Length: 228
Image 1 (cartoon, rainbow, N blue to C red):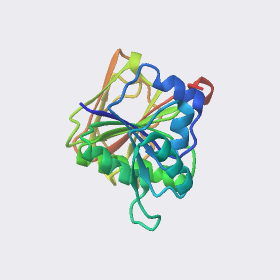
Image 2 (image 1 turned 180 degrees about the horizontal axis):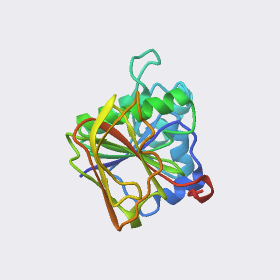
Image 3 (image 1 turned 90 degrees about the vertical axis):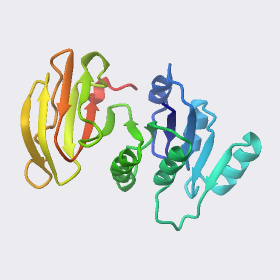
Image 4 (image 1 turned 90 degrees about the horizontal axis):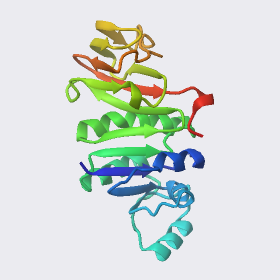
């Protein structure tokens, strides 16, 4: 499956970014607006630049293009989509299936929430997008597309695994191999949205299944143990 790295314009700890990229290879690297500056700091040469470049600046964009010859998908600031949504479209058109995102959290809250909400759109269109920062690994599970989600204890991003409802109700959640197991439990944004926060994997392998809805899956480590 074709894999893409997407670097957006949010704050990115360079020490974390360097550690994260060790041993990882990608078929496509997309820099989203000010994500180009992060790519340069990480020593990455993106294959595609996407956005309105109101943050990075058009002069900086043109200067980089003249120097590198990298293709750019440039848009006007007055548009309905965020730069990240446009980058999702370009990743799909390039045939990507797996997308790792850096720089999507830790900055403006509106953009951070939008990036997380876009996970559902990406999943429905065929992208498996995962957001990473020094303390969190965030991805979306869809009951129709993901009959089960397996968590290998040795591969966990951190100690804690949390599940948050994205649709109003998520039905039939069953958790096996976790510290706090569940069987056929429904959770709702309006009634018990924090029921599945801060679980832990006890066995070598833990499994999530559910009948309907969308769940945000977050593997987290405490700040003092982050990859910084």
